[in-house]
Image 1 (cartoon, helix red, strand yellow):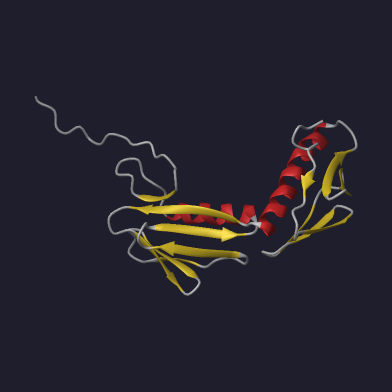
Image 2 (cartoon, rainbow, N blue to C red):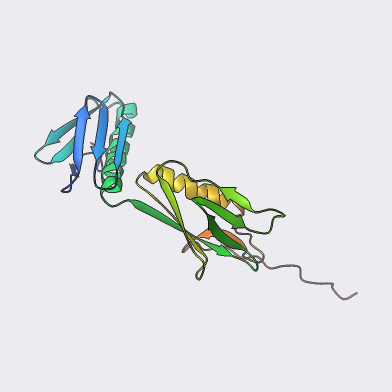
Length: 182
């Protein structure tokens, strides 16, 4: 059995989980998420916890077992605490601003790049530390939006300019060595 999949998911106080076959609805103080999982995986409520089981030892079911448990745990964690990804803007003249709810990125192009937030995602920009916070209750959506922002100007290896995750280490390369002696 999957080591991750066999661990039951604890439900914190203030979070409601409704299981209807393979459809799960999770409601908490931050919002509501719902998802339909594979019918090969069994979901059941057992004394304040959600237990995930599988019917057989087929490779396709084994692959879904731990994944289903991890996704369900992320849904429960998201509606109770939420998720945040932090990016930092590095480079002379590079900056990020808020224009209403939209994120405006000034990162060396001839025009600012405007990024509207999808449903359930909010942006927060700190001008002093040049950080962008992407927050929401859906871990997958928060991570994808952060990746899309980073994709506008990924960090380049020669000067280190661009948008990177906080704590991301960019491998630096040496530039041109200059003209050699004849």
